[in-house]
Length: 152
Image 1 (cartoon, rainbow, N blue to C red):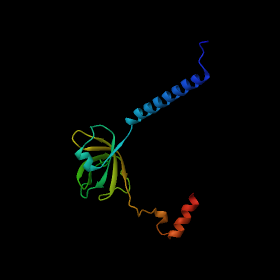
Image 2: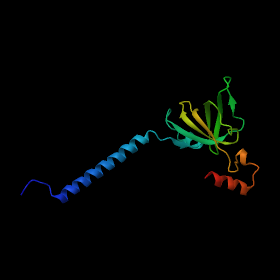
Image 3: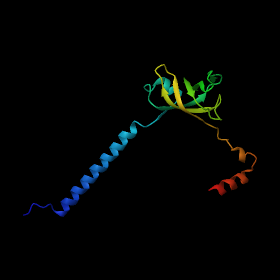
Image 4: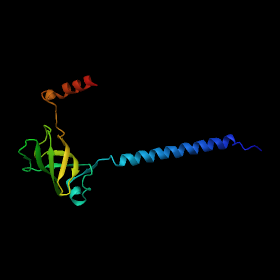
């Protein structure tokens, strides 16, 4: 008998090596993406179980009426995002989206400071389901459908 591996066993070894490599690559990708994930919190969740300070997360809620204040520098705003069970103060420095206003929905991307204030790097304003672009405001439903079909 010679010391050569039979073809059947050789294929089995190659399949096992391929599976181990595939599983290893999947685990490595999942581990690296774990630190890049941006978790979403509602204000009540952030109050009840806050993320550790300086961890990038998203905070979504309604902008509390009467809470929107602009600092003297003109680019820093402070407001409160709330839901039915919690309130979180937010600070944002930058250009505010056009649809951002008190009483509307917003999503802030950023980090929570140790004092509980959420410092947003990015601010997104939500619009309601009835939103219609200015260009399509005076169109009938059939005209709007035709415009949409033409852009496909």
